Image 1 (tube, one colour):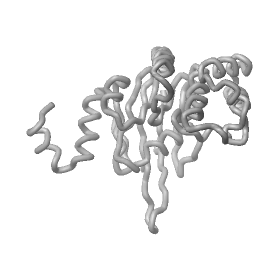
Image 2: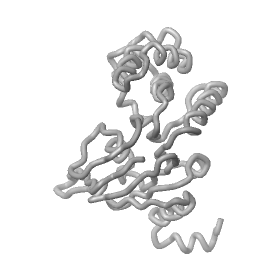
Image 3: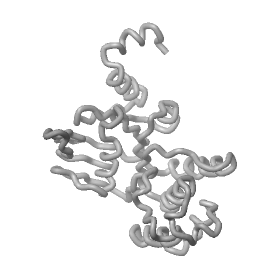
Length: 230
């Protein structure tokens, strides 16, 4: 379970505050995969970082039960001057898991070869994604924060990643940020819509998608739905 209590976070833009969340109280239920939807630039990734604890709110608090991942899809947890294996060892110590087991798991999964022992600054974007995804899947979190994860590698590696991801999701909650409606429908069973600093929960993911699309299309929404009801 993740609970937001009177949470506020804003950035100043041209002399005025732009609110990511404004005095928001909401709960992400335990055991559910919840889609986090909103317009581009509304602050979905920032909200994930607030939940992860990597940035601080202006006021209010985030209460979590169980172990919550960092936002998977962001490279912020990877230090470019460290090698891949040094990054893994650091994360293992932070989260209190067996270091040698995690090093072996990521080495086998990420398929980086000798690059695993080279500084991450020399990695391609695909290699960084493999390392980050491998590190996140090596730890059995109670809730995974997913920020626009995209598949990398050949078809065999993508299939392996999908199987591992499905295994982890079978026994954990998740908060998904994705622009792919098909991915949301496939992966999530509930939704949260972020709009103008407010956060609204929908127990039915299709209702959340509908609300999100209304926000995107505004007054044109009803007309378009009449033309294309599916």
